[in-house]
Image (cartoon, rainbow, N blue to C red; front, top):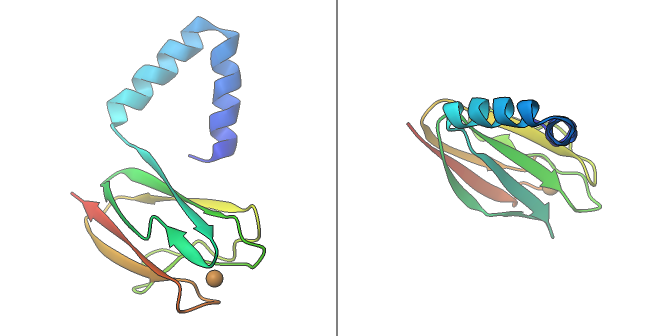
Length: 115
Ligand SMILES: [Cu+2]
């Protein structure tokens, strides 16, 4: 789920109570949590993040320099993120996913997915 859809949904929820209830129950049924990793000062924060399978992680680049979050295994890749850009990835398979920035290989982090 992107921030854009969240904002759109929020606007709808204010419009009618029915939309709020429907959305809330649908969200709760999935038990999925949205996490955020901020990229700032050429580092990922939090550097190491543990999530549950089915959760999403949004990588947000706050730096002037472009960055990526690219799994060592290539299991995921945000692609090039410009300043202010973000990418949301869903993690469905348990495991540990070390990742790095393609432009700055010294930038490293990891996502651990619990099944
Ligand atoms: Cu980088």
